[in-house]
Amino acid sequence: MTMELAWFKSSYSGTEGGACIEVAPSAMVIHVRDSKDKAGPQLAFTPAAWSGFIVFATAQQLR
Image (cartoon, rainbow, N blue to C red; front, side, top):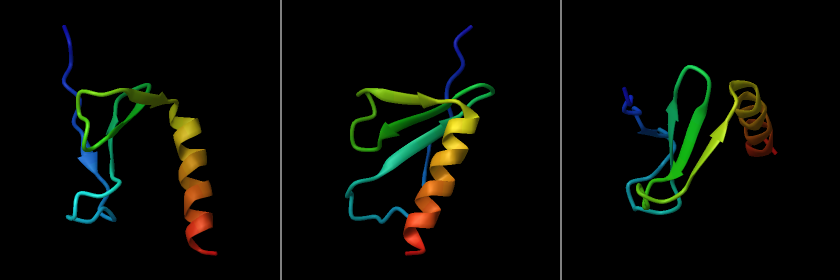
């Protein structure tokens, strides 16, 4: 059985259609794709790796 992913865009994404990503968390993997190319390639991260990225990205915003 194939499970559909529930994709969502960040609340920080604008409505202008610029550079946005969508994220779909699942039990073991965080899926990431370009919101403008839904059929295109996807990245997959472990929850620990994704959490590390979020910490890094948040720290960069505070600079």
